[in-house]
Figure (spheres, rainbow, N blue to C red):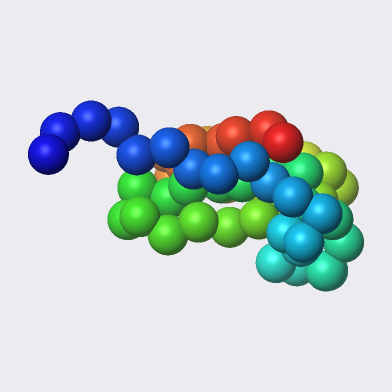
Length: 59
């Protein structure tokens, strides 16, 4: 089977891994893990996530 895996849309049940607020951003790490962030924490950690070559997906 070939193809691209698609991640489901964020829902109201998805929470920020830092503070528990509603998640607005998913950061998929090259290792396969993912982190969810509210807007505030996404902006705070954006530069480091880009250094790690994370795929940053809004909403």
